[in-house]
Image 1 (spheres, one colour):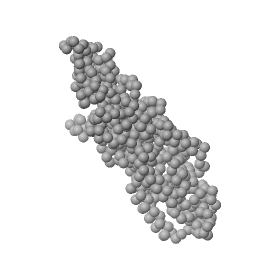
Image 2 (cartoon, one colour):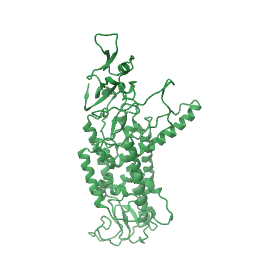
Image 3 (tube, one colour):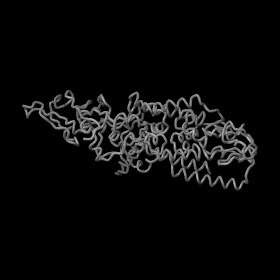
Image 4 (cartoon, helix red, strand yellow):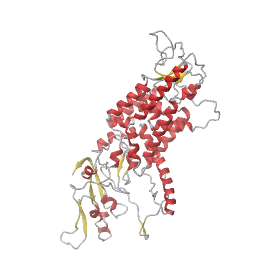
Amino acid sequence: MLRRIRIALALIVIVLLTWLFVDFTGTAAPIAGWLAKIQFLPAVMALNVGVVIALVALTLIFGRIYCSVICPLGILQDFLARLRPRKNKKVGRYSFSPEVRWLRYPVFVLFVIAMIAGVGSFVALLAPYSSFGRIASNLFAPLYEWINNGFAAIATKHDSYAFYHVDVWMRSLPTFIIAVVTLVVLAVLAWIGGRTYCNTICPVGTFLSFLSRFSFLKIKFDEDKCRNCSACAKSCKASCIDFKNHKVDYSRCVVCGDCVEACKFDALKYGTKPLSNSPRGEEDSFTSQEDTSGNAALPSTGAAESGASRRAFIIGAALATTTAAFAQQKKKVDGGLADIEDKVAPERKTPLTPPGSLSARHFAQRCTGCQLCVAQCPNDVLRPSTGLLTMMQPVMSYERGYCRPECNRCSEVCPTDAIRPITPEEKSSTQIGHAVWVKKNCIVLTDNVECGNCARHCPTGAIQMVPLDPNDELGAYIPAVNEAKCIGCGACENLCPARPFSAIYVEGHEVHKTV
């Protein structure tokens, strides 16, 4: 029952979270967005005390069940491990191995230091939820979009608008490569040792391991029933069961229930009390790897099964409540007469961070680079940074669209409060940067034509067309930017007809202002 409940809840979590990262319609966020906000590290970064306390309590009661039911990277590891081919099905997948402390704890210390120092690239590289988001948004999303475009092509032929075509494009080559490498490393480690990454490298797993040693419910041996057949150890994806000494390393056990399912002699139970009738005061042989084992006596079978069923029901109730690729390219043409050259991003002295992020420093310290805001941005404005310290954290650029004042989806889905919730009204008065005119790129001067596109589309009226020569009102008109009114939305940069570099671009602000 424990294993079945775990698998059912894990499937729900992984499906909903994957949908959240691949969805481009905005449908998933209201339904599955809460799952991103109950992930451990995002909750810590957002200072979401209620969620953190709930997850700590969940671990102290049930053990590291978070890692096998709520964490999407942990669930993905289990799925990858199942894909490993086996020549002999009678031979188990795993075996007991000692804890790799020399690697586990230094990685955790370095991770904490990186969080404090604001080295976002290192945090994003190791954070489990962020790693899953990187894989989902860079590898799964293009496949999802290709399938959608296939249905859209079929629907169009039948005069149906049930599906619509979306562009499939690579937002960042370095992030795509990191996503591929992460998936390959996870697959190799999962095939070799099951939960090796989870129990050796993952900083969240290491932190929860400190708590799970003292969990109220544990996997326990009944030594009288155990035949030392090693079935439990061979099925343990955490490699934490020492069947010869009848011990379980609770710091690595993720309470998946596979060992209980594999035992044919009913020698393993998930419960609170030791399965022995040792005299009072004798050490519990199941609570520590260093404790001595005692003789065990099995309670009545009916009572044990009834207790196991009740515990499984309680676990299910608790968990339920807490719980590159490119599409077919179409040539861009202007009226079918001329090719349109793609825009190239300008060199900004200060990168643009989304409205609601308050400042570049606040954003760098809170963002874990999970790519959720990038995946959910409907205007293709956000893409992962390629900076050394901020790699994989999102930055704004306006080659494919601009930040529409009425859109606040990134602030709604951000699980870490790196982008704080902001209303469209607040966004319209938040200045993330200001527009800068580049004289040498303006087609008014290079092609001797009238334009004014930037002024016509500025939502705040911050751009006015003024005569190049104040004494010649019949001559060329150029844009003049009122920096006090500009909010940095990028409409002018995106809609400027100059190619490949726009004649007007947005320079970011280190600290956002209210205009």
